Amino acid sequence: MPDSHPQVSEASLWRIAYRTVLLVAALAGATLIAIQLQGVIIQIFLATIVACGMSPIVDWMCRPPDRIRGGVVVGWRPSRSVAVLLVYAVLVAGVISIAATVIPPAARDVRDLTRKLPETGRMVAAWATNLPNDLPADMPVPPGLDVGRGLSQVLDTVMSQVTSIVGQALVVVQYAVGFLSGALNGVFVLILALYFTSDAHRIIGFAMSFLAPARRPRTQRILGHIGERLGGWLRGQVLLSLIIGGICLVGLLALGVPYAVLLALVAAIGEAVPMVGPVFSAVPAVLVALSVSPTTALLTLGLYVIVQQLENYLIVPRVMERAVSIDPLAVMLALLIGSELMGITGAVLSVPVAAGIAVMLDEIRRDPEPADRDS
Image 1: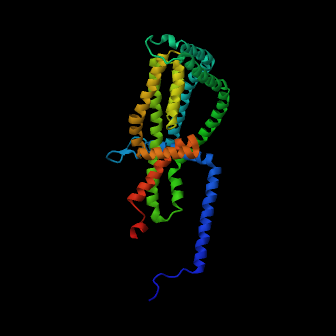
Image 2: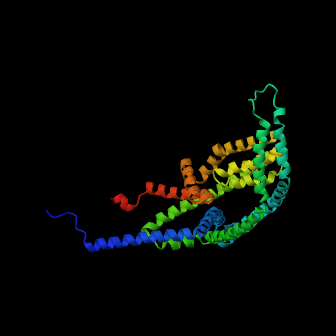
């Protein structure tokens, strides 16, 4: 009985081994190059996200004009290039307006806070020292426990650390240099995003030319879904930062906490850093509120706790569910993996990356490759 399985020749085995070695070497080389060009890749990815966020607006502006009977065109629609320039001009003008409105009072608040921090530390230490006198007379206190001295020592340590951090706030100058570098990178990302938005169809068409014609429609569909989710994530993140920053600003102003604009700006920026951002943004607010009174500090802490609960259980689920449509558990795993691999940058970018992976997995599960269906 002849063997139904044809024998593989030695030449074929060598050819398979050779191709496998080449593939592994190519993957290793690509990985090393990606590690070396990590910053550039991140900027390209950010530009892609911005382009995905702006593309729906550009597409809406460039939609076909309405027509009435007789073929008379109603309404004017700009070309895609003009629409892209208009959208990004409005975006840049908005960013400059917000920066011009927020940065001067925020810088003034930082300067005043740095100058008043030692006095605030002395006020807090005095409050801690006098705390035993303010306690009820019938309140049981363990023998040998000096509440005031203990709290005073703890607060002295905290304030000395904070003073040291802020006092090194010539680090602020270094931060200014870093901010300038980041601003230049931001300009590069914005210019790159402008080109991506303007030439999206040509870029995708060029990429599709490397694929077999049978695979192009499905790949274009997957890329379209990924673009929708990336753009949705960007719009959702901006909306979340505005909501959280606005709530904190109103609450801090109502409580009479100094430097409310600066603290609200910190809360809005912290919202972009998953998990740790909102928590750490509460620390300076409570410390500043403590300079007013312990009651104000407690109320400020309560405000941030309420905002955190609203954010976790109401605002973020509703906004992100509509924006990226991925499971909360997948979001948490993505955050953990991203933060472990790339720190804060990985945590920030982990959700859009997870959204793209989720699109591909959904596509594979719903519509496997023709070869898989035939097998």
